[in-house]
Length: 270
Image 1 (tube, helix red, strand yellow):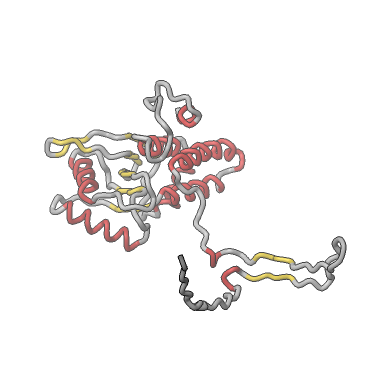
Image 2 (tube, rainbow, N blue to C red):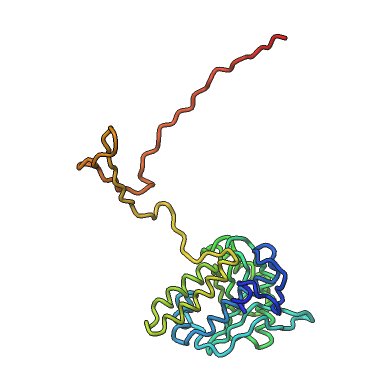
């Protein structure tokens, strides 16, 4: 279905007649979530375990995947609770609440707490790990701690225990790419096709598939300066041309001074 949607063959998909632009695609966030986690579920158990270890950094891993549920419907105090994805491992459950954007505040502690309470009290979750994907302005330990405190306050005295992991879509892609690169060479061709599907979905949503590189991290560029003699035509480069090799951040700043020009009064005669 993904290839049909991205190539304009949308009849029967529910997206017929709609523009696939980031701001106008209603429900596109669900397509993003389903595309990524459907393909994660196809990974062999050893590779999926390697990915979880790299991506989640848990003290106790989820174990081999036994089931995956998309948008399960749970009841809580007479109302419906619907998390995005639940991955059931043999040891732990991974509860996923995903937001489309990586760098904006979109998660609500009350919503996350309700999903944890409903899943735990209904017996749907086993030693749950709550994964918030996207929807934060930063993915630091401090940001995770702050959201965790808000969730704990919303949980109150319910007795629900969980482990919180906050990650971006970009971090997910980089962890999956690294895990696939470590797989046996005989299996990599198919795995990279799977990764290309995810990359195409990321491109649709304007999400990054590469790591950030800051100016100070750029390697020095080897720039050769050449001199040409004046006259008709070009002469050979001077043999003693210097080679500049320094990072951009190390280049000296230009001395630019501001000059104040005198004001001029204009008069017109009629």
